[in-house]
Amino acid sequence: MLTGICWAGMIASVLLVLNLWPRGMLAICFVCFLSFVSAAQDFSAYQSDGMLLEAGFISLFLAPAGFRPGWGEESKPSRASLFLLVWECFRIYFESGMAKIMGGDPQWRNFTALDEYYQNGPLPTWIGWYMQHLPHWFHAATAFGTLALELALAWTMFLPRRIRILCFLIVTPWQIGIILSANYTFLNYLVLALGFLLLDDQFLLRYLPCFLKKSYLATKEAKPLAPPALEDQWRKKLRQQLSALRLAVTAVMLTWIFYATLAQMAWMVKPWPLPTMPVSVLEPFRIANRYGLFAVMTRGRYEIDFQGSDDGQNWFAYPFRFKPQDPAKPPGIYAPYQPRFDWNLWFASLSSWRKEPIVVRTEQGLLRGDAEVLLLFSGNPFPHAAPRQVRCVVWQYWFTTPAEKHSQGMWWRRQLLGLYAPTLERQSDGRIVVLQWPATMEPHE
Image (cartoon, rainbow, N blue to C red; front, side, top):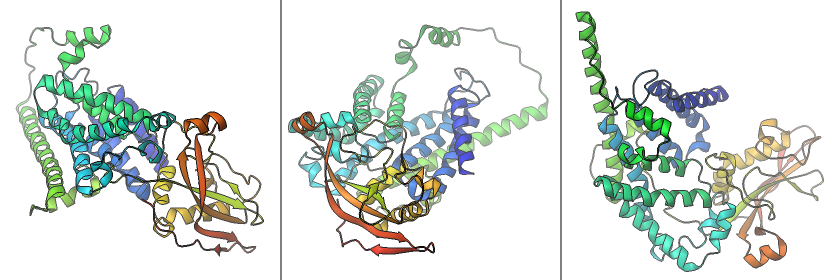
């Protein structure tokens, strides 16, 4: 069922790109993705999922009507929907800046937040390795620039045209830099796309290919007025009533979303006595969210490793598809794809195994030789039969220095910290028992 929902969403997204029934395809995409994140539960508790759902829902009111609307000249987007999409872009920046200030992390106040940022994120890139070794003044300057962009520059999104264009020219390369230096799924691609709403037709026209420019300009040419088509009185009245109903629904929904998002932003500063029911009603649909990226920076990189054994002496690691494991393998660029299993394990490494049930469930699946669990890994060190024992250990990772990389060819160096979760053993009768409990380990920051 979930696979079918994913395929339906992907097909609808392709048809949307081809400009076939934009509103209908957006509605299908929204329903499919909402169904996916609802079913995925712990694997979809990310801010990026809420960002995409919010943008997708508001876009229903922005997209032109019709099956093949072309440039949409006969169905202008509502100004309210355009404003709310820019409002979402603004909130992603501004609320993230507020979260950094309100969170109290001294790294942001001391401009040291980015000193180890490229190393400690969920899925670093090989470009991030090089950026990590830039001098401290660069990291301090980008930390200051991040706060300045989020808390000050973001307000220029609501200023006159030339200032909005200048804002676009600043935030766009900034987002591209983040995309190249870290794998934050589709988050930065979405923010990058929302930034184009700061531009207008006049600015974009000069950069369009000739065939698109001619097609667009043709819609601006004066055309002879067609005689009004004869229409039955009841049909005309019904059309007017439907138009009024559509306008009322649009006004109510967009105003509702604006209130819910504005209230949540206000509550970041002070618990104002505002009605909470309009906010709570929208929560299951995740179309009016509060954001706050990197409020507290991670101070170390910890990696969980699943290992299997038949004799309890020789242990073989299950290779991951995306997250760092082999010190000699360069970190890749995977965004906008999000390997949610690898992401969840990064968050689990900062917490306790008792709070992360997917770790023990994965161990149990590996002991049973569950095919669906094995697909989460890039290989199986036990191709003939499942191992008798499975354990989960935790390592601390660091980027190698340029000298170490030059002499050893390694991208990472690592140190084994110990057992992360209970070591499990499969008995001859199929029962799974605990063979060894991990020592008490404090959650990492």
